[in-house]
Length: 196
Ligand SMILES: [Zn+2]
Ligand SMILES: [Zn+2]
Image (cartoon, rainbow, N blue to C red; front, side, top):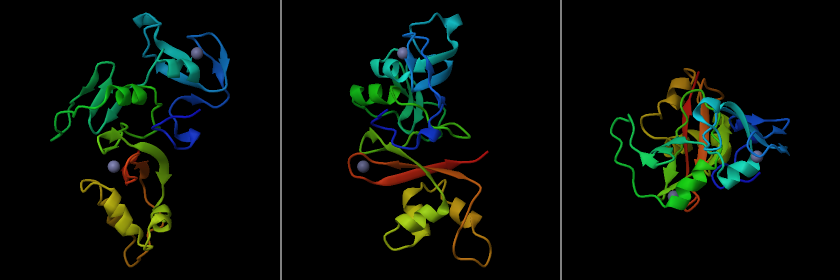
């Protein structure tokens, strides 16, 4: 399986059946199938959409899709709409191909609502989950906190200092799950986090 916007471990992919399955759309066996608690697909009547299985091939063909909450707005069959969010701007004009590609991208397993990050007028690529040590490892200067602050929006960047044990300088663990994304165009890394 290959996705433009999902380059993280398969274990972070929501609904993926690790033993494969039989697709309810094309009726074929496939090594990569998704458990769809509610299938977003015109193949089924509304009352038949619960508890379906969809395969990777049918996803690529657009026979079913995934909707996503993103920084641009909520992405569904009609495109991007501004939702609930506080001081979010109206969604920018995003190329239809990009919207369609993200609808063919599985969701990320998160504790709260997934929010797909954006950069350079495109969706970013999901890379995986980082622990505090990953920030030290990936920082050019070895300063994990600096990298964390650089990658994290100000409303979320209290996590590092909040997690630091008093009197210690190195952060070893935290209570959160931190999701890392990379820009396809300028390679900037960003992330957000949630917890249970
Ligand atoms: Zn199928
Ligand atoms: Zn960028």
